[in-house]
Image (cartoon, rainbow, N blue to C red; front, side, top):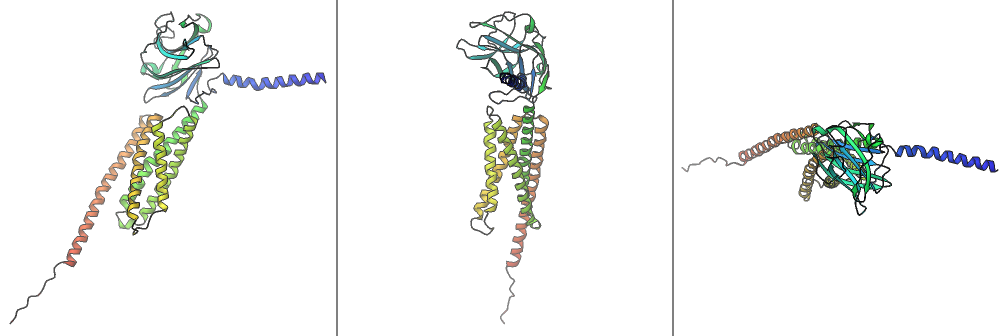
Length: 398
């Protein structure tokens, strides 16, 4: 029995080790790491030394990059640095982001230029802009978050990272051998290339969902809705299109609503997956659009008959909400372009579509008004001819 008990214990230990080992290995890679704020990055790299990792998302339109530099196996008495150096693979002359615990024990991050081998690392501006810089420390891991405003010389350049001890509130020199001497490499923000760089699966999935969200909303709210309004406004002027214009208008708007709801739902899903990232204006406009469009759908089933005394009020409501929905849709789509940063070609293409629709609407508006005026003139002339003064024969008294 004792032997059986020992065998069972050994078996349990083996099973536990097998179960834990892959988990630990996965945790120590950039690809599987999950940030506490659920923030996701499109690319990452396991840096070859100093148990360090770099995560980033690059926006080519604005030439900015959101980055997170992680250094594990640190302590509250350690400083860390991640930097760019277009002059070479060395720390001297680099443009750096440094993080450490200040005298109050709070994780602190700021920018500094490394211009000497003495690690004074005073707070100062860099050759490029840096915003939203902050530090986070938990479980012996320090993370530097920042947004880099790059120029052409820094899209593909050298990166240097380092760690060293703190002496009270002062920075002490790091080791000049071993891993500390090999903590250099290259980075290409635009292609996601670097030492062992990879695109994270979660971020790629989120990017696809963002693209689906953008396409669905651009097609529904930004294209089909305006076309549906144009069908109702301009086809209605021709008697031969009655009642075809109504079914075309209703079918187009209902299809736009269904596609738009799918896009809206995708956007809400993205919002719940990114609790630390909020685009307030875009979100509020999206919710308002959904409410307005839903009201329009319900109004379709509640509309009075054409000769009803309340029909005029329904018409005012229906047209006001409809035009407001289209205007807000176009504004929100441009907000989405600013958030997604898909490249100038997509924004230019959509702008061209809107301009073409506006020109078509202008031509149809003029044509419709001319037809209405001609019709009114014909009716007036016909009425004058029928009801004009009758000729009376003159009689002469003899």
